[in-house]
Length: 374
Image 1: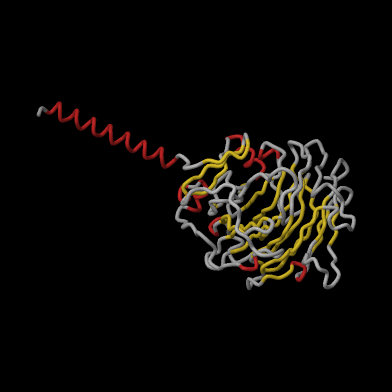
Image 2 (image 1 turned 90 degrees about the vertical axis):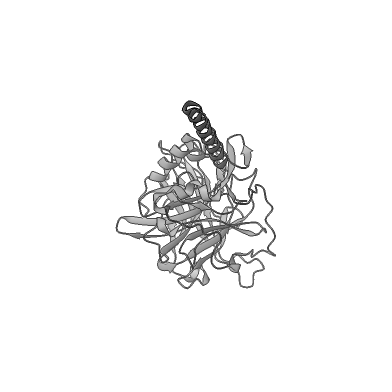
């Protein structure tokens, strides 16, 4: 066989091998399944080991934690028997749902992250808050039941209902937040979304999976998703530090369904909350328009003594330094209302032996407007 024929065969073989590698690569990159929630919202089922969260430079040697080290029975439903979660998505084994992100969404999320409300300080122009927090402690977690409400929020406004945990030192902060948000500037629509946000030791933060950092584990429930039509079911949001790894887990429970460990923020992202955090908080936050008007908070109503007349957050508990679950008001709490003309706060009071177990709770919110101050 001539040298020319041999070289031709070798080149053809190499070409076939190259094509095979390309096909294999495309199959690995392509989602195994996709779920289109609405016209502009699609989730792709990606390989859990190739998810974008692991692309963060601080996570080069990170090993995925598939579930919390210790079962947390106290996160089970307080309203009745715990039921099985009814799957609305359900990615195949070995994959997780990731929101298909446009360049505009990623850019908007990064821009909002840069100016995101700092829960350890009230110095944030155009931002107003109504809630409670406890500082100078040592906390391993926070959890609460609340619901979100559809509101009329302008493109350059935002309204949140959230729980958060974090620590600050000098000019550095580490914190994690979760709950409901309406933020057309990030999501491109005025719907209510669940969300997670973090800020770590590099001074940068991120929403959901818009940039690397959060490790999604659940194949049924993504970290951020739009709520259904009308008022959503009661949701219990929990952030707690894992005893074994130090990672910060996000858990959600909807109505009387099972609680879901959605995923976690790895310990490598933080430098001030490696051994717990010194501050926890709960409440509503809004961001005003550049032109001045502030949006509504909660359901848009001031607290007036009627527990169901305004937005309410109930069963607010924290995990102390020993991982014991305690009512938040068993620690010194600080009331935060910086604009009483626009928003209010009413700490809950329940008569002894009241048939409804609300734990520590409060009502909050208001209509917003043009007289909320800077």
